[in-house]
Length: 68
Image (cartoon, rainbow, N blue to C red; front, side):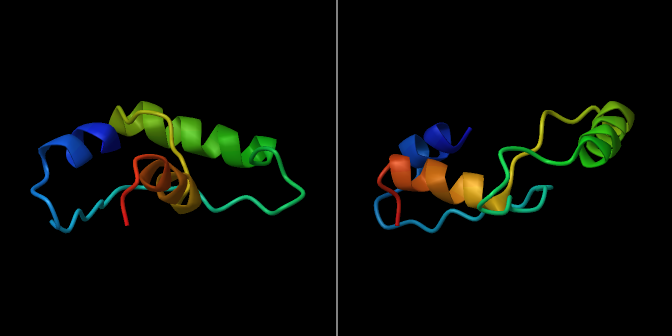
């Protein structure tokens, strides 16, 4: 998704992503707590949403695509 945004955006364009995100994980965490995952899965099922990621995950994706 972000890769396609980067591909079609004009040079110097601003890309704004508005989406539902889960919280950023703490440094000592590898994943969300089981009750958080369960709640997010219920929301995904109710609204036909894909899996969630954090704002920090989106930042990492943007950095991997050399976006500022």
